[in-house]
Length: 349
Ligand code: AQP
Image 1 (cartoon, helix red, strand yellow):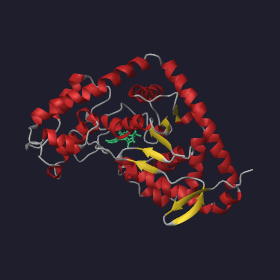
Image 2 (cartoon, protein in one colour):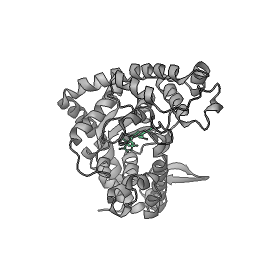
Image 3 (spheres, protein in one colour):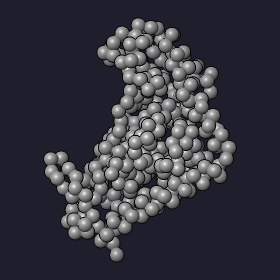
Image 4 (tube, protein in one colour):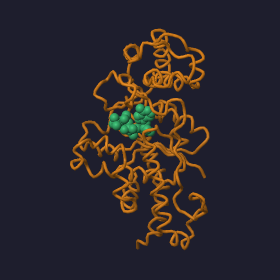
């Protein structure tokens, strides 16, 4: 049956892209699906080993999930390192995946930079751990931003190779589920996960450069809206956001070749739960000096109650830890079941 899984790294202040590309979608999906949302603290070590306040960062992502509206009683919210199956299954997937697959990942190339020999082995293996995160629960749907699309394709490749390399064992153990692999009907153990990327802002871009992704780690704070920015800061950042001199176009097609305008329209639409077409119908022909303050007000209306609730939750770390512990215990029950099957399929005594 369908199961939603997604994760966010505790690597700094959440930015608007994390919210619109991921967390806001989690909140919508919890109405219709069983969901598991994870603070992926093992992933946080891949780019930087020593963190000053990993515990607080982890709690603040959990607080952002809950403050945004995720119900940790109906669904599972936990941190990755508390369930050993993630690292265990990732090891097996390290042996399923090929080095060439990892070398092709654009996130690895971007994050490793020029000094690739000096990147951590964990950074190279990141997508293998991500595949393990999802498949440990046999997750079928993964809401993410567009930047994670390539990693999800790799998770499908890993599932497919595992299913096909072990096809006879899976069938012999009676653990297979019928599924389509291309045109062919096969019996596989791991599902071929579907990414959920759609929506008006699948890739929120930097406010300073419409060709670069908005990111927690961008050195310029003006490039992003942080979930915890106050209303003056949000207004100032949108006011200073880079735009071209022309007014907003009258049609969607008019956004082509105007990445900054396109980005602000997408952000508006996502925050208002409207389509981009809708936004253009209302604001087409207006100047940015008119549009930006309306956008800033909308962002404040959406983000302010979330950051206020995050602050309230963060005042009681023991309460957040208890939620994470409860989530981890429930996640672990599912994870252990999968690992028992996987060990049987592989042939571990
Ligand atoms: N700009 C973005 N637009 C849409 N979605 C985005 N996501 C991140 N940036 C954007 C989505 O947020 C989820 C969690 O991301 P993550 O914390 O696991 O790592 P990331 O993608 O590396 O995020 P950042 O902010 O860019 O962090 P740094 O700077 O540390 O690399 C994912 O679903 C992601 O797609």
